[in-house]
Length: 186
Ligand code: FNR
Image (tube, rainbow, N blue to C red; front, side, top):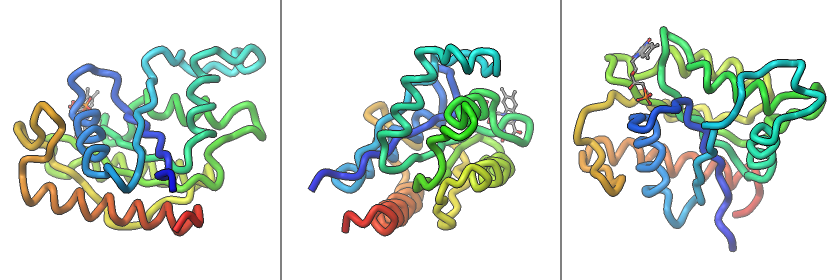
């Protein structure tokens, strides 16, 4: 049977994003369980309700990728104790025009990393309340507040730290179980 398709929304646009690295490491750990694919947000314009009538091509593509996925994984940085604007932007685009949101009922999970001691915990809480209101069926636990350290992933996206690998393996297994339960593919 085909693996469940997971759209991965990384809330950072920068090339060397540690959240992108975390996403790629999780994708590698999930091989054989979930088929994770990063959604490209680099050309998404800033949301403007005036553009809804002539919905931009980049937003159409992103919306279609979310619609076509069996589940969504949100990988969030923490910016000023909340989610980055890039992440809120994609959430807003995919929720509009009114009545056409592709978030409702979608199985989802949240993870994120920063170098700070609380490892995106505050941003994740904000994101959770936004996504619950959108009807995303969020995995409750394990919560993973990943404190980033240089060298925790190698250049091939392998998790080199055994303790980190154990935490991320547990997260992947819980998410795969959650997606299977909600999509009845097991
Ligand atoms: C940050 N950073 C940060 N880190 C944190 O743990 N809590 C915070 O509130 C903030 N606030 C914040 C605001 C802004 C505007 C920036 C640019 C950065 C640091 C942040 O965790 C760090 O830049 C990460 O590398 C961002 O993730 P990506 O972009 O590497 O995935």
